[in-house]
Length: 130
Ligand code: ZN
Image: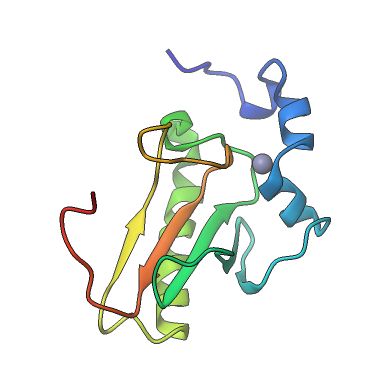
């Protein structure tokens, strides 16, 4: 069962946040190509794009992954979705369509343990994704 206490109070989470790649990007310690910045989210270009448009929407709060989402993360999730749409409009893929992806765990190749939503678009995609 997920710990009901705030993420920042999880044992060891202070260390993991200090080592977290995306927390470092949020702090400006590691450079990124910014696309958008909102109160609860930050959006930047994926360094290894898998589509003509490939950006990551991350919450400013350190949440490990989608499996750690709790009811009180609702506002963050809504803002992530709204920001994804605004970014899709800004990058010209809102009309043609885009895919939103959360990966969880090894089989899904979730490589950074800080919640991030992939926004992919700009070409015709296939299904199933593999
Ligand atoms: Zn983080």
